[in-house]
Image 1 (cartoon, rainbow over the protein chains, first blue to last red):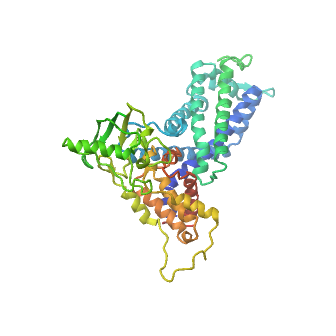
Image 2: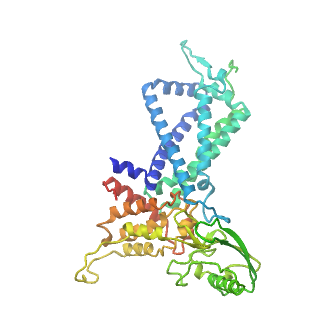
Image 3: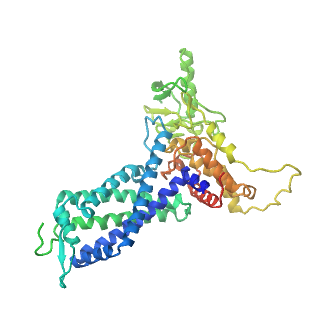
Length: 236
Length: 250
């Protein structure tokens, strides 16, 4: 197995790791967004979806552990690659206009690290409940008397704070830029490229990035502009 | 034309180096870029100053010796053109032109605009060849090669190893150069026996020389005077994955 580990530490191997883990994280981003968009179906739909996820029990922890592993490998390898890239050009050009590099390609480290910081905030906000503790404690009592976590009201209460909503919107734009480059780049890095499909793949990646940005920012914006409000009787 | 040049001057590998400004008066638009520098150097020599050192050889765009990052673009503003084939009509009277060397840890500056590109030679030594037993020459055309493969191999073989790809890459990555050399052999029957180990060895050698990693900026493709396409980089990624999966260590 030594040859495999050594190969994964080569320049191509590290890119392979970033591409594969990035693809897995992209899959998570898409499913996470599709699940959360149920906020537009109302309180019952979103809270039932959240309760279903929680009911997965051990399976949920397996998924979380896998996601964490992908995330750590993706971020750590990308940082290592970026440090090596810096070292590969010790003296910078005095004039460096670029020929055809894109903003999204150039900004991968910055957008990636910012999204990383945002993910920590996002977890602190909605998962660990450190940001708005009261909203995180909300529960919904069902007709049969049982209670469940009121995710809907927690999210709405969060996005009713303009600064928080704008933070989410800004983070999603950066995530979109990151995905715009990453979601076609993996095709080249994994050697799945074909020059006849390349323009279509780049267009599809840009389209996917736009869909992810628009889908995700629609939630904080809908709350901020009052299209979605707290359920009757819930106050934070 | 009257031009102002901002030229990188560096006395040796250990000198910090700096941009110095020179006037280039009465430049003919029909001069090549290197002829313009020759004229500037003549004047510097007449004035008893040290001429600007730069690399050149064939001056017809095929040897890969000339370099120069002109206004931030390797080989200057004209696509698919080496510095020696670039003419001053690509510039306007009164222009200020910045001239810098290829900048990469793996291409250390020797003096002024001259860099040491022997790291490329060592990558070739690592695997950029096809071993052939000597003996009676085989019949010509006895080994059939499809036209598509022959054309693709030739597209890759057009690489002159100038290093513009490294100079253009924000990460100083040599992926396009190595990919072109790998693809050149990968499309020919003579290259097949050593295909896997060649790919791994050349990639390992590229890493050992201290080139950066590819981030798919595709600046290399835009700067390449021979228009080597980036599809070869994807093809090399594929070959590398296949070679490693088959247990090759290089």
